[in-house]
Length: 417
Image 1 (cartoon, helix red, strand yellow):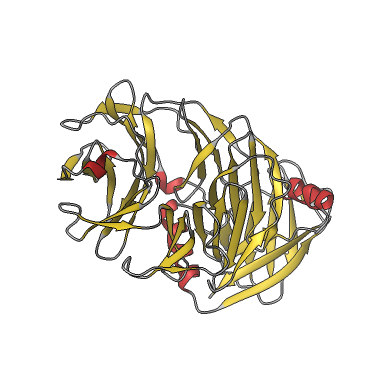
Image 2 (image 1 turned 90 degrees about the horizontal axis):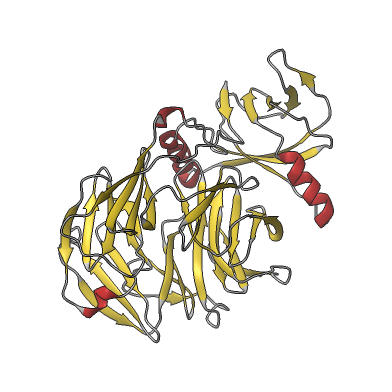
């Protein structure tokens, strides 16, 4: 029997360890970093610094160029090089290193890059001040038709496509990547600040106390949720949950399902970028002094991960890679009805017959929302009661550990084989 956790256990980061960065000057500008090539990598204080464990840091490269005093918005790890973008008022700067960050070459562009993401097909898509651009090699860039007039500041990838955001606009595309469609954002209350992805949902953070989500299967329908924080300027996905960040003072929300958001207090004096791998979360930036904060996950093997069929971050990412690269996707639809049985251990369960599903499947499961906004809101609330789904040949078993749904739930089940 294969477990597929729809809602994972919440892991709250309560204790951070802080340490000072040796030989690295304090930077007054916020920085960003990335886990790539099995290292944490940050351009900070005019230096390129790396760490394998988040505790011991090495200065790899440095530069005397004035450009290094500007804020890094993103850098991506390609197959053979690091790519760093710096914004400016009227032009962008592109730095490339092919020797693991020891030396860099600089190019000047007539557009400014705000974010980069890697598409399901392995291409690089850029959110820029002159539309959405795509590149395979960071040498030549092509602008996506009908997007060149929009100033984009964020772009995010999912196994099924991508979503890009401007302050008052959202565009999405399927994994075919050749057609981008604008979403109606008339009901969005504040300017958009970030976009993330988790559990088959795009999460849209705004500069106000609002977060929206929309299904990858129905991205035109946005659902509004109130949150206790405002101005979500960044998103970070560690394989099990999505983090949405709030600047000054640094604090954040986390979610494992895209519906329930947990507020966290700032647990470290460090006010900067957060990165993560399968065992460690790291914050680098300015605090009371130049420092790093790190948190080692106590038991990464037992972390339950939603929507991937995995029970650890490593397994979840492996399953996602299989899905991203799989040749055959099998789609089922089904209805979770009212035939609930009380479990002896507590909670409720129900058998739903699905002809063709296999015991070894680890499906991606999502609710099919109604076009009527009020009905879809009740569906989202009801869907949040589902705690776990397992697969057997010809059926799935649905568990609700606390409350059972009081309406039928139409679902879509996608298996990659």
